[in-house]
Length: 110
Image (cartoon, rainbow, N blue to C red; front, side):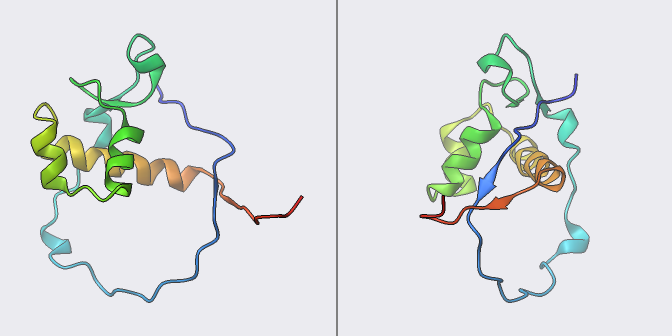
């Protein structure tokens, strides 16, 4: 079952960042197939994408990181979440972002 995407997502325009260069250990990184870990079921959290085997929504986990949580804090606090499940959250979010259009919001513009 395909996961629903959110239309009309908006974000603030950001200043360009300096190129951080190559990712350390990129060649050694393990890429996770998010489809093995993320699913959507109308009976769980009204069909929001969740990590399989948990009731943890992708958006909830991303909000934890936005609030400053570390991977260690998330994994300690939610023992049903695995490292691969956590990587899958970011892989899913990256794929959704590739398919979404973001429109800048200009405060005060009508």
